[in-house]
Amino acid sequence: MTVLLFGVTRDIVGSGSLEIPSKEADGLKTVEDLVTYLKKGFPGLADLTSMAVAVNQSYAKHRDPIQDTDEIALIPPVSGG
Image (cartoon, rainbow, N blue to C red; front, side, top):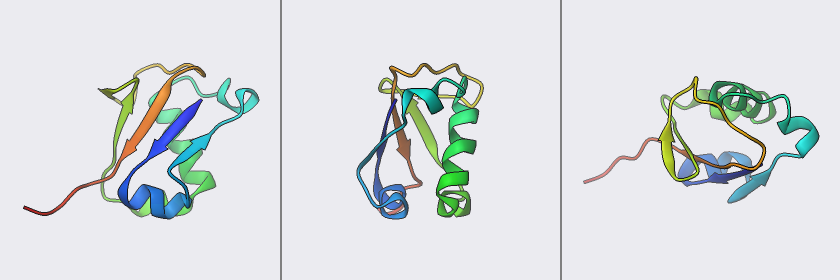
């Protein structure tokens, strides 16, 4: 499973993308499972006030299912004008 990172999520993880090994991705069934997994591995993500998640280039809800072949994007809050 590929996780793409943008903005502050990229800064927290230290990379623009993250590959989750199939063995670990098999246990991640929903977006919520993935977010919980990532927050354990990268505690700075838990400090964000909000974070959108896209699955295969479509915004997803926490209960939406995921598969290990999906492309996931973490989209942090954006400010500016």
